[in-house]
Image 1 (tube, one colour):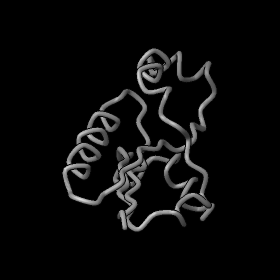
Image 2 (image 1 turned 135 degrees about the vertical axis):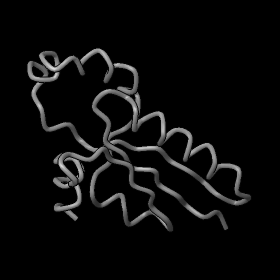
Image 3 (image 1 turned 180 degrees about the horizontal axis):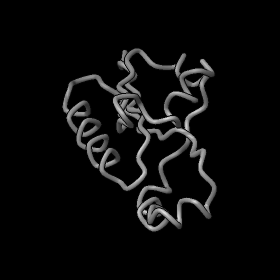
Length: 100
């Protein structure tokens, strides 16, 4: 039976996305691992993302599905990736986890 692994991330400029891809690729090397990559929902408006220069970067991983909290129940293992803001996880990841 396959071990279901979810790699769940938030990335504004693509840096954490690149790390999440590398983690997912590494997990796929484990025999029997089924690995899925997800991002959490964005909380900032498109206008704000454009103002801070993130809109263009986010297009690079727009194809990654946005996870719903109930999907966590499908996993045997979950790996989270998030940037930090003043020592705390990004608000988008906190918002997602608060819904679980």
